[in-house]
Image (cartoon, rainbow, N blue to C red; front, top):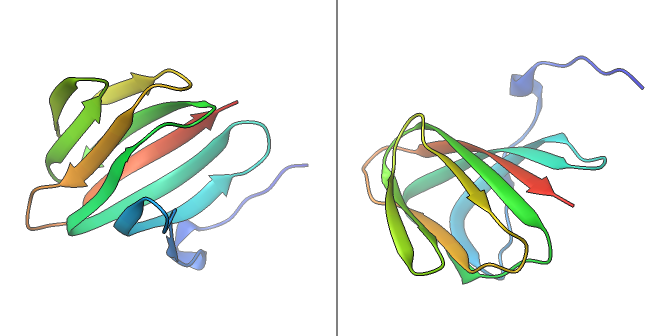
Length: 107
């Protein structure tokens, strides 16, 4: 089914309160792959965790740190991160403005 909408019509919703703080999302696609526009407040973070599905993160605005396994990378606009299912990962906003990214959960 086709769908057309303005992203401003969607409300920011808290994301994964079990492992995240200061992280909010707007779900753009929920069937098959899940695609979420994600906003991380300053000092907000997604703690290290593992999921049974893969991820793709595409950072659009702000600055922070993203961790995959034992590696740390500077999160900045244009960075793309692929995370395999079951791999430890985390990210946090280290700046003083929102960190914005697109998060894709890949079944």
